[in-house]
Amino acid sequence: MGWQGIGRNMVDGSAAAPYKWPEGRCQQMKTGTVTSEDGTRLFYRDSGGHLPVIVLIHGFLQNSLSWQRQFADADLCAAFRLIAVDLRGHGRSDKPEAPEAYLESQRWADDVAVVLDELGIEKAVLAGWSYGGYVISDYLRKYGTDRLFGLVMIGTSLWLGGEESLRILAPEVAAIFPKLVSSKPEKNIPALEAFARNLSHEPLPDSLYYECLGYAAVVPPAARFNILHRAADNTPLAREAHIPVLVPHGDADLLMPLAAGRHIADTFPQARLSVYEGIGHAPFLEAAERFNSELFAFADAAFFQG
View (cartoon, rainbow, N blue to C red):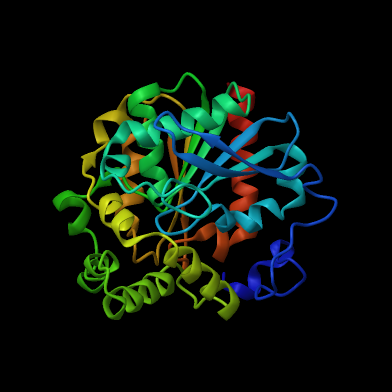
C-alpha cells in the first residue's frame, strides 16, 4: 500500500497536508513533561482520559510527532488513551551532554517507568518503533513484565549494535550511520537526508520528508554518537517475557531488515509476526489504516486477557 492508500488516516484527504490535532477525536489532548531519575526532563503527548493505555515510543532521530496518524484515528482515540514520549536527546525532551546519559540501559528503562508513574498508569501496552524497541528491552531488563499487558515491536530488533546487528544491514545503509554522528555539516547533513529517505519504501510526501528531516536535525551529534554506541543482545531477555507481542514489519525495510522482525517473533514465546508487503521502515505511516486496525485488535485482546 502506498501513500494513496492511507485513506481515513489522512488528516484532510491529503497525506502531504500540514498536521492538525483532529477536533472531536482526542478532545482531552494535553502535553507536559516528567522528570526521570537522573534529572532528564521528558516531553510527552497524552490523548487524555482514563481508558486502557498504549504508550508509543518513537525511533532514532524522530519524536512523538511520528505518531500523528495514530492520534488522528477516531477508533483508537475512542478506545484507548494514547501517550507518546520524546526520548531523551530527541524532540522537546532534554539533551544531556554526558555519555552515560545514553550509554546506560537503566537510564532508558527509568524513562519509561517515570512516564507510567507520573501519569498514574498501572498497566499498559508498550509500542516501540525501531530504537523504541531497544528502549522496551531496557525496560524489560530492569522492571520485567508486571506492568505490561503486551508489546508491539515495530521495525526493530533484539540485536543492538555488535556484529549481528550490522550483518543484516545492506552495506550502503550501514555506511550511513558513521556519518550521522559527525559534527561536520558536510558529512552529517547528507547522512541525515539519506536516513530520512530510508524511513519508507515509497518516497515520503515532501512536507512529511522535511518534517522527519527536521526531527533528526535537532538531535545533537554527540547524542547521536552515544545512542548508536550501545550494544546488547536482548534475545535471552525476550525468551523469558511471557506476554503477548505483535511484530509489524515491512518486507522492504532497509534500515531494519525483515530478518530482525522474524527473530523477534521466533524468540518471544507469545509473539505474532505481521509482514507488510512493499512497506519500509515505518508501517504506521505508510500503511496507517492497516497498522491502526492491527494495533486496536492486539491491544483490545491484550487488555482483555490481562
